[in-house]
Each structure stands twice: as structure tokens, then as C-alpha cells.
Amino acid sequence: MKKLSLVAGSLLSILVAGQALAATDTTGFYVGGALNRVTVDVLDDAETGTGFGVYGGYNFNEWFGLEANLFATGDLGDKDVDISAGALTFTPKFTLQINDMFSAYAKVGVASMAMNVDGDGFDEDFTGFGWTYGVGVNAAVTERLNVRLSYDVTSGDLDADHHYVNYVNVKDIDTDIKQLAIGVHYQF
Image (cartoon, rainbow, N blue to C red; front, side, top):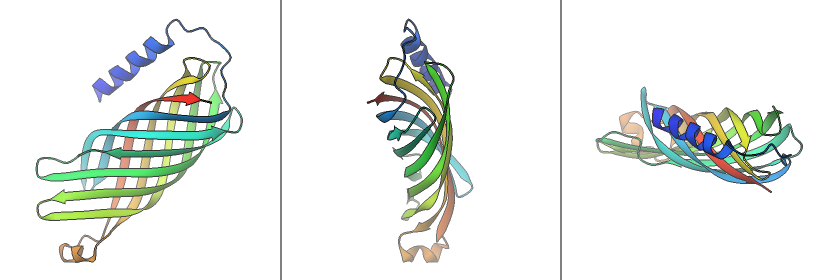
């Protein structure tokens, strides 16, 4: 967590340093990618690891837009259990322009979630729908290139995809996926 924060802060400082405050374009389409520090709370346990994501959206004006975010993790489990998770989220996004360079945003919406738990003789996929919310800070490095730091939480009740898991009494799981992410996107 400290390494990701240090990298995010350093990258933001390097990119922002020396840039003139030019009028940035805050409307229209944008698309980008993110590196995430992900924590999955499942079965009374929390697993942490790295994830990757892509996001994009459309800003109708400087304060309102719609955003989609697709992310996935690698193995978050320990040596005995492998856990991977992912989600596709859709949210309206509300932005507060601080100045020409910086803005803050908040979003809340719906999510389609998936998780795989494999280990100790148990291999099961869980899927379902849930809610997502997040906050972040955006820095316009150039007129079109933006860097952002965000924190998102996605929660849902996921159902087992196969019926044979009934003998271990695991039919569904409540899960929270929390992400701290550094992203870069291009504003068209």
C-alpha cells in the first residue's frame, strides 16, 4: 500500500511539475487504464493484491458524466487458496472543478461482479450484481492527458454458479472489493 502511494505521488508530481495551467477540455469522451491495489473481503477474510483496469466515459458538461469501469485481479489468495475477482461497473459521475488543472469527483452506480475461489478441493465461480461507489482526484497534465487517483468500493451478494457446492453449504457469498487506483486517461 505504501509503495503504491509513493509511486502515485511521485508520478503525479513528475507529470504536474513544469506544466503550464492551460485551459483543459473537460467535456466529451475519455478512455484510460489503471493500476489498482485491491482488497477483497470474502468469507470473513480479507485478501489483498494487484489488479488492472480500463475505464472510459462521457462528460456531458464540466460537472456531470457517465463512466464505465472494468477491472480484474490476479491471484489474491494465500498458498492454499487462489482467489480472483473482477467487476464491470456503470456510474453517473459528479465532478467539482477546483481550477483548470485539478478536479474532484464522486460516483455511485451498479456493478456486475465475478469471483473464483479455488483451493482445498474447492473450485467455484460466483457471480452477481451489486453496488459501487467511489471518489477521486483528477489532474489535467496537458489539455488532453489526465492522471487520477481514486478509491472505489464494489459490494454484492454473489451466487455460486454450480449446484454441487450445496454439500459444503456455500450457496452465496457477500463480498466487498475495495480499490485504490492510479489511472491515466486521454480526453478526446
